[in-house]
Picture (tube, rainbow, N blue to C red):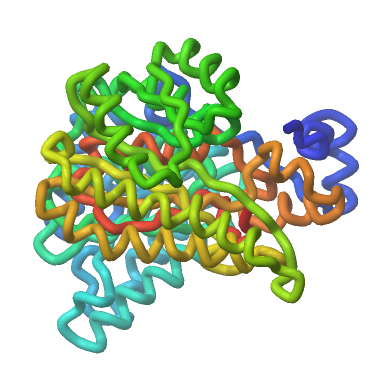
Length: 446
C-alpha cells in the first residue's frame, strides 16, 4: 500500500510546504539489500570498560571504521554506548553527555545502540536504578532522533559479554538496514550461545523452515526473506488460499502444504511433510492469524472462538507436536508473530488482543523448554504495517496511526520479515523468550 503523503513531502515543493506548516516529514528508511555495506560512516564506541574495548576491537574485524573518541564535525554512521558496568545513576552522566555531543553528527539513517544489563539482575538498588535509567534514557532518545535514525538497546544477562555471539548478532542487526522499523526497543541476550554466520548474506543456509499463513501479505514476505537468506522452505496455508500459496511457493522454490492449522494433527502433518521432503526441520514461523473485530458488547461466540483458536490455540498444539518430535531437536528455532495490540490493546479487538497477548505468554513460558535442547523461541510484535488489512482502516484513522510513531510512517511487511529472519538465525542463539516490537516506537497495533 502506498503512503501518498510520505511520497509528496519527501522532496520538492511538498517538502517545503510541510516544513513551513510544521507537518510531519517522514524520512526514507535505510532498508537492507543483499551486498550492501553494514552502514555508512564511522562507528563511535563510547565507554571506558573492558567490554567497550573488546567490542571496539571486534567491530574493527568487521571492516568498520571504528572510533573510541569522536572527531568534531565528522559525520557518523552509529554511536554505541557501552554501559555494562554502571552501578549508580550518577555513573550515567559522563558517558551519556559524551554521546550527546555527537548526536548532531549522526548521518540520516544512523544508529544509536546502548549495551547494558537488566535491572532485574542487579545486585543493589542503586545498580537497578542505573540499569533501569538506561531504559528510560534510550527510549526517550529514540523519540528525539530524526532523518530515519533509530535507537535500540542490547541487554546482557549476568555472565554474558558484549562480544558473545548473540550480543554481536544483536548489535549487527540493530546497526543494519534489517532493523529499519525497530526503534526504542531492547533485546536481552540471556546466554553465550549462538554463532555468527560465515556468510552474512546467507545466514540461514542449510536450514529448513516452515512458515504458516504464507500465501499473502506478511507471510509471503517472510517466505521471500528466509529464501533470500538461504533457507529451504515449507509454506503452509488453508486450502482456500491454495492458488496464491502455490504462486509464492513457486517464487521461492518451496514445497506447499495446504492445511488448516487448527486441525488436531496439524503439527504432525507439518513435521512429516518437512522430513519427507527435506529430511529435517530447523525453524518454524507461526505467522497465520485472523481478525474478527467487534466491540466486546457486540462480540459473539463465533468471532471470539475463531480468533483464539487460530491465533494461539493452534500454535500451542503445533508446539506440543514439535517439542515431542525427534526431528525438532537440533538447535530448533520457533518465531511467533504477536502484535502491539496484545501489549497496548486496541478498541474493537478484545479477541485479537487476547490471542496476541497469549502468544507472548506462550513464548516466555516455552523458552526454558526449548532452551534445554539448545533452541530458542521468540516473538515479534508488529505495530502499524502497510498491508491489505491496514488499507481497510478509515482514511483519517489510518493517517493518524501512520504518523504517531518516532519514524512518522507505517512499516512494511519486509520490516517484520527481516526481524523474524534474524531471530531464526544462529546469530540469535542466545536470545530466548523475547518479544521484539517492530513498530517504529509506537503502540498502535494491527
